[in-house]
Length: 205
Image 1 (cartoon, rainbow, N blue to C red):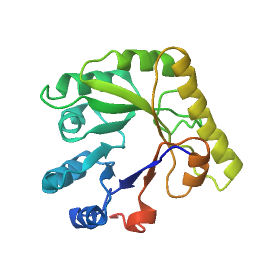
Image 2 (cartoon, one colour; image 1 turned 180 degrees about the vertical axis):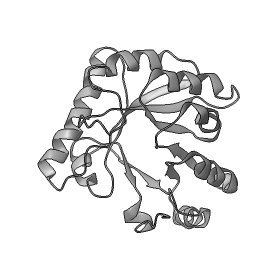
Image 3 (cartoon, one colour; image 1 turned 30 degrees about the vertical axis):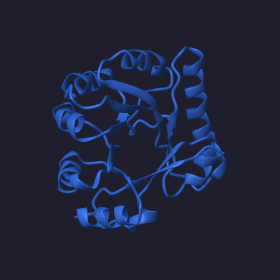
């Protein structure tokens, strides 16, 4: 089996929690909220960590993300990708990006539809200062392992279809604390794990 990268999802957890995980050897961290994530990136700048933005991204927040993060997993429309490309500092390495795909077809879920994915992928791959690395999905939560695997298999198949069109992508960002086994079984290269690392989150009321 190929190596699966562990992305520690540190949203809502303080910088000290990230510092402790880094001291234990974890290097890659994922954030969902722009201001919170940027504050941690800046507070822990001396640790040489790799920061991934994995949450929904609005147009008015793209500049902060473009210049504080190494990866963005949640691109689902061309305008966001264009803004990230335009706003990425030319002195920084290319921003590594994944396209978020709505594999479960839920109206409430972010993500490009599978049918619209090839056109978006070709457009994003052509943008300067971005490097299109792969696909990301957050399927509906379910205890049904077979359904989990079908959703993740769909994302893998979409990646393979893009490869057949000349877009070779090396990243499948799929699987979280409750479904990572199914994701890994279907070819995930990066799992996004928060609760299993940091504990249960306590969200403010």
